[in-house]
Length: 302
Image (cartoon, rainbow, N blue to C red; front, side):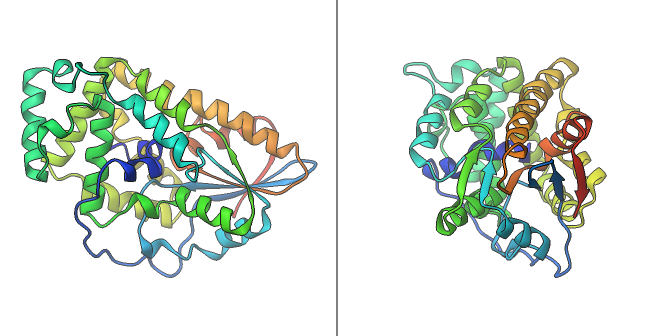
């Protein structure tokens, strides 16, 4: 389901469609440990929190270590400032075709038939997604499936911290922008967009999502970094070789390098910052943590 891609929509997805079902889910265990690091430079401290892109009310309050790190900071850094609804709305508009162009003109007949079948199961007419580009259809289906399991994009970690920072008077810094994220999605080759949609449909058809989400949440709340990394990159490994390379470069490697530069800028300041980014960007050989370690910063997992 490419769970970590959901951050690209954030609050904007709430402007596009009502979430379908909401079923009760169990609360997290009381003693949890989430991926959180303290990064020190000669002038300041930055706390880096690796998040996941689904949320539910039972996630809150977050563990004491996360709460304490957030309170110590006067700056909050996120991939995108989800409180800027206008910017999000403008960015989302690029995920739609300009009439008379439409989705069915870009999908082979077999894939259209599978998509219609899944949409029918969800109670959505095909005409409702006709204006959307394939990547937008994939993300919308993913969001609807998470909603069916009781998760809500409005309860996501990025939205939680953004709203809280506004109330607390903390400065919000964007490591990226909604416009740049949607520009990246628009740059995906037609072949990759088609494969992403095919994998999403397969996960819905085979009811794979519940076990994937359960494994992701468990790994995140126990700070099992190897398992979390494996779960977050599972779908990438199911892409064809050429598509996987394009996906990794555009979704992760290029963005990780750019976000690391922004975090380094925070480390040159004298104010404490709390950075919350998707764990998929933090972990791995070309993830933010690896890049910061190579640069010699003092890092401790909390």
